[in-house]
Length: 419
Image (cartoon, rainbow, N blue to C red; front, side, top):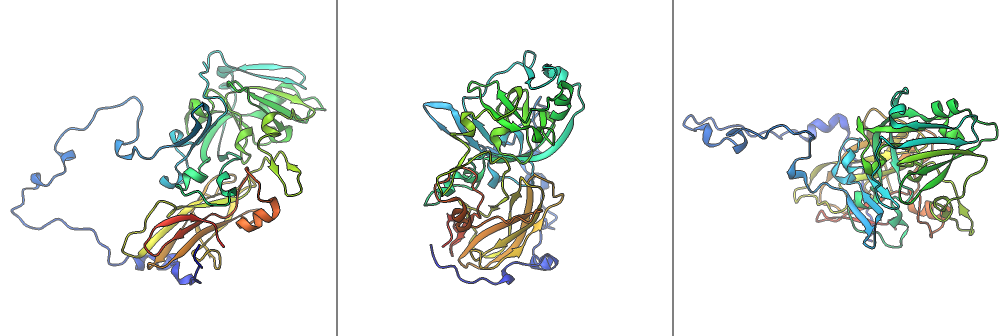
């Protein structure tokens, strides 16, 4: 990687002066010639009737390249992931059809009329709920992100993967989830004094089951029935999923069929052999539920090209934290030698995506773009060196270090590791 020259803070424009930066830009005006027959210059869409109604809206065919990118083993196609195209999206809400996926044995076909949720174990009265019964309970909505523990895992490698931002770091999405607070049902069943954990099991072909501290279930956990206002999609847990705001994806169990209260964790495969972190001293970090603070510049990013004419570009991206609200995002154009505060799009919500942006003056110079997030607890997103110093270099899960995009003098953008 090339030596990064020291950049000036003047490359980042102040918002108060931004209007002047775009002075001189104007929209083209129609010709004033009187002999033009405007029927000859109308777009085709204005000369004929449009399409009729549809029962369910679909994206424009001109946007057919904005898709999830699937990464699965051809021999076991039901075990893999699909990445959310964060680099193609704006705002903070991920559309249902583009929300990332992680499946261990495919997407089950579950009839909601026969599906039930069982709450048993260390309870006073075991209870079983149909989906229709759950709909009768008071419901709450919560906007929050869900991030797979394996998101950005290629960044543990010695060389960066050269692919689009969302197809490297897009195992995270943000949505409005609506459903029944778990505490209502647990309180109805009656919790025995020795209950400390719950084992959540899915009704999928993998019989996925994981352990969850009871304290979290009594806090902000939701039995989600709806995503962004509509019933869950099958790939995201239909007809019922568990949503644990701010916690790693594996414990946000899809196709939920059982919550069994216990004294101790079950020590299943997905909390022992998987989703644990090998530490430098040879021990393993387990139950890393809370997703650490992270940010990502989504535009410009890898695969994009800045045009030949230098000028003002809007740097924009996403930040999130499992510990609460994002309080600050800083942006650097010189590989972290200097930083400038970005603007945070309102509202800033706890344990949810926060969109940040900052105008950048590019004059054809070499640059390395980075973002660094700080959450309301004061935790600062670490550099790659800081993360490796704490966690070692043999990780696979829970990567949250600063991500770097190199901008060459000809405007091409690459994924790099800083020196």
